[in-house]
Amino acid sequence: MSHAAARLAAIHDRIAQAARAARREPSAVTLVAVSKGRSAEEIEALIEAGQRDFGENRVQEVADKWPALRARYPDVRLHMIGQLQSNKAREAATLFDVIHSLDRKSLRDALVQAGWAGPTYVQVNIGEEEQKGGVAIAELPAFLSELRETPLNLAGLMAIPPAGVEASPYFALLAKLARRHDVTRLSMGMSSDFSAAVMLGATVIRVGTALFED
Ligand SMILES: *Cc1c(COP(=O)(O)O)cnc(C)c1O
Picture (spheres, rainbow, N blue to C red):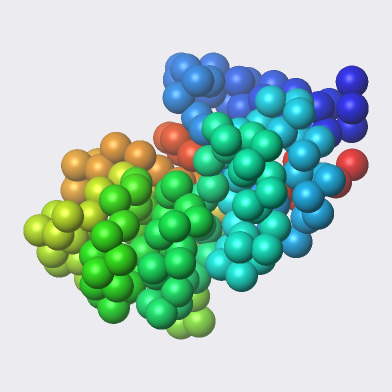
């Protein structure tokens, strides 16, 4: 087994353990491999091991790196997980399959203009951090109801909890906001905390370091 295949299997084991502990189906959790900054060779090793969903955070890097990989592996799905400039919305719409980082009205309008029709997650500033992206919790109800008036496809909520503190309370809060607003999917959990996220209802986890480094 390659190193990539072994790491992937280990992550799937941990997802299954966390899911079972919470009486959830492991298959209800999609693993997105965060491949920002990784080479085509590193990515290909994971694709060969069976991984199909990949997350990136820069449009230019995706435009450079992915067309050749996509041509060889047409069933790969690309997830935009980073902040997206409105003037890149059109290009992003052609490069990505899923967007996790809808965080403001100007981007919403740019995505509508671009004819974007893929699953779209609203990023919530779950720790109410000044410097972080995401819709403020207080503004979420209005943001979601306005979004539901557009042709965009609201898939779920996404959040990145504050660094350096226990993430579980933030995952629980995101899950509560989702229930309150009849949103069923949750993009939350990274290398250091994805087990907790799965136990608290994550349907998508975004894992980079633990998949690409031994
Ligand atoms: C980089 C990144 C990840 C992955 O982080 P790791 O700690 O390497 O697993 C997940 N989500 C977002 C939004 C990221 O930018």
